[in-house]
Length: 375
Picture (tube, rainbow, N blue to C red):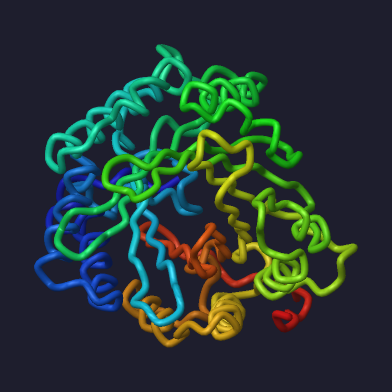
């Protein structure tokens, strides 16, 4: 083992907040945000991170968060739509330097409430679920994450991600069912597809046209055929469209071959309490586990974007805004690719991008299957 860094080692070293704030500013320019908006949002990022924003990068990560593979408590994403600038988002783990999961949850709750005071929105939906997701002695891999959709004008849209296993993994399904019931979606749980777990429940807070309650379902060894049958929207995407996205994003051409490394995720968004069916469906593919390097992942993302009439050159610029390394020199800069459907809107493609503040995952040595075109 190497010796712990001394004060002399860390003096003047780059900090977590400086690195991720700089990445946000550059990504903001790529996404078309003004310099003043990007600067304001960089300040929000460091405020949410709290004291760990000043933590030198020569020290190890503040905790072993699973928000990213290298334990950076920050993840960026770009959501693309046809004929529009992409939407830049940032996912944060407030309280990531806390001594316990309970303390981390309290820090996260206070961060949300500070945002509510600043931007004048209600936290009533979250407060009504506090006993389910922020108990005195929580379990699981996270307490509360905050996602910000960075809108022009300096006021973001806010989402919170909660852990259904907070009262124990064996109670995750019951926790999701109770949460949906309290939110008024009393028939929603029965409409969800089968899966191997519920990693997140997410809530839109603040100024959303149609605030969503979103349930994420984990799918081990997911195949293209099974992925095509996961949507519960009415009407929803056809199986062929979902299967085509699956095969291109994962680089898997045979239906008998599934995601045997990291599982796929489906997300089901509920907006209408009078309906048992979700109004939105998203399929998330962990592309980093099924590509040799980010050059392959980028090529797959570009095929998906072009298929849906979106500008893939923006994603190339976004990767350059995050890091100077070549895409072929690592894997994980593009963590997930997602295809989202929402009633009344065109499909969206989202690329989830890693900060890589602490480590770059080396390219894979095995040879994944060749990707196939989106149908």
